[in-house]
Length: 314
Ligand SMILES: [Zn+2]
Image 1 (spheres, rainbow, N blue to C red):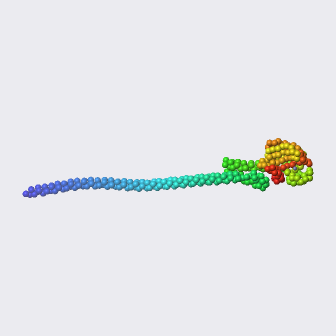
Image 2 (image 1 turned 180 degrees about the vertical axis):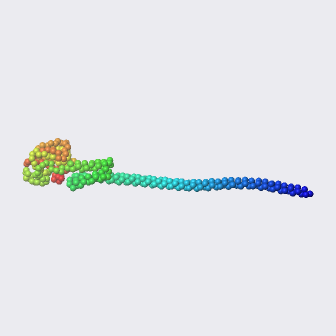
Image 3 (image 1 turned 120 degrees about the vertical axis):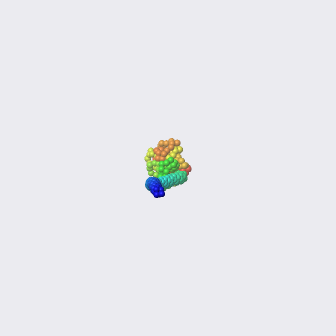
């Protein structure tokens, strides 16, 4: 019995030891497992830390990039704004230029319209000029006034149109009138055609030969035999010949029904058909015909009516 008991105890102890060993073994295994778990957790934690750090880094980088992006966006916006401003400025400038060009075009058109109006006005004024009448009136003041008007008109044309073709057309039209005016001035017998003194004026007088009252149809200019006689105006010689009263005489036709007669000549220097200018030397003074001495009998005839030559003298 005792031996059994001893065995039992021993077995019990053995079992206890065995159990303890098992326990220890189990504990060891658990510990190892725990250690392993701990290690794994540590690794995971480390990894987590690393990941966190990475995340932080990435976030930091992200923030940096976001800042950069914002910065770039701002820069781009600034550039866009600048470009837009520049574009607006260009468009405004272009619009202004268009406006200036339009204004210039309007101005040119207005100028052209004003110029055309002026040209029409001047044409009408020139067309209406009746200078021949003024010239025929033989009034000094009227002739001078016409000359001034012509000069003023020419200045007006030159001021407005310079030396353009349009100006030239008007100037030419004006000078046609001026030429007509000058032609009338040239044709009019406005000076006494010989040197000498007026012996007998135009009109009724006592005849120096028979003492009767007679109408004197011209003026007598007495000077020396052979002294020069000039055409009193531009014209055409229509007669050279003798007459008992007039002696040798010449008639010059000045147009418009106006003639001059030069009588008692000693010699004629012209023939019928000759064109003579005002002041041209046409004859020599003499005493042919019914005279008491050498003199020029000078007549002015308008439409076959005797005129007082003094009325034509300027
Ligand atoms: Zn006479």
